[in-house]
Length: 314
Ligand code: UDP
Ligand code: MG
Image 1 (cartoon, protein in one colour):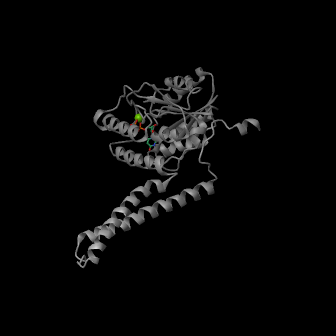
Image 2 (cartoon, protein in one colour):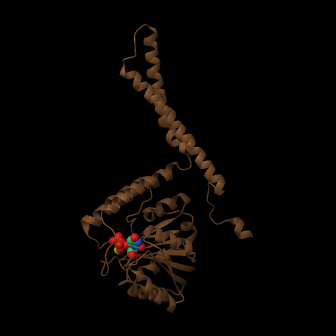
Image 3 (cartoon, helix red, strand yellow):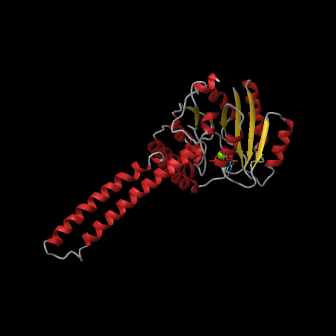
């Protein structure tokens, strides 16, 4: 097993040295081949200099540098793209997650495809961080149907082929287990230690909650409807169509019996329902076209094989 540890860093000059030492001692003791893949997310302090010093001393260390700050999710995505390991571990670069927990995660990787950390005893302020997280965790587990206690924990281990298949953007990294569940992966959760941030500053505030919430809508939408848009829009469209039709039929009968219907609000409503219905069905059909174009151009299958028998035989 070759293990890639992916670490995002944004202005962590004070943490990088102790972090590196801790990771190195844990991974050397573990006895597996490994690389420490640091991603400098456009830091404007001495992070990249210090990183370069470490990289030159240690062959197990690789470093990527972003031109500007692209965010933690982008840093993880770059890590997944460049990691060479067949197992990828992600961990925060501020020593809030403890590298000593990595062996615990790795020991479960034979059996599971994703092992996720659970900061049961989380050391962050209640009002600005833990409370929004409680709400987010509840919503995410309800909406995605993947039951974890702590989606936001960065300390996670993945089989490489699982994450290399997922495209990440926004605040999406916390949804990897939910997105990956579509691939039929086995997910475990283990309790991990969490420390107060001793050095440097947290990069986030309450506004992240809003971004997480919006990303949740996207994830849910894609999870349910991305392969069948007409099923998503069609039923509402048909119902709207049907009610509109009944209303207009009723008005037509009244009109034929000699009464005037020109001033009736119901007429507007009926016509509105018919138009909205047609639009929704049209949207569904356009969606179907997009899905087809996507699958044909990417040659992306609509299924996922476990361990490709084909590859084994060749
Ligand atoms: N981080 C990053 N890019 C950013 C913000 C944060 O790479 O734009 C890194 C940061 O250096 C740290 C990790 O992501 O290693 C978690 O960030 P932080 O500790 O600020 O988040 P918190 O623990 O407060 O949720
Ligand atoms: Mg932190």
